[in-house]
Image: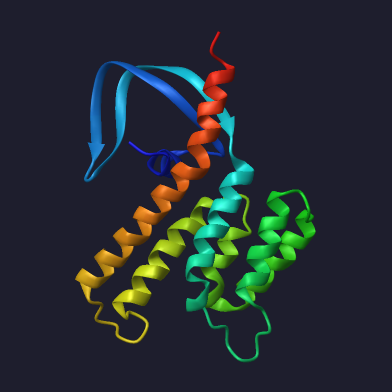
Length: 182
């Protein structure tokens, strides 16, 4: 139903527009995908760069939640910035690896930001959703999480992520489908 949902199931950075036919069955609760007897590829676009930048956008929304231990000089924005530069072709794989390792050395605080630096950036988006929900629910201070607050924060973050994904990825998919139309 959304680009966000499609990317959750994507095995790589290629976003496809397909036409379903035959028997079509919705799946998920809430419904987040369809299965069909057949599908026709209408357009495909490699969104690796945009996916990395999208993960950085998501991480920036909750970067204020991570406070590394005092003996760690790493700053979450450093890793995010290197990941952005790498997406634009302005940083090397070695620089990205150093940034990723620095985030990993920060322990749990760097988990989501570290994911931004990996090749498959989608994991960062999922970690960010969790971090936002935990913060609002007060989970860090209280192991008995306020489930309603958790759900509300998670849903709000996913709504933002869905909207942002549509803003970034839909124009690319639409442009690809226009190019491939005879």
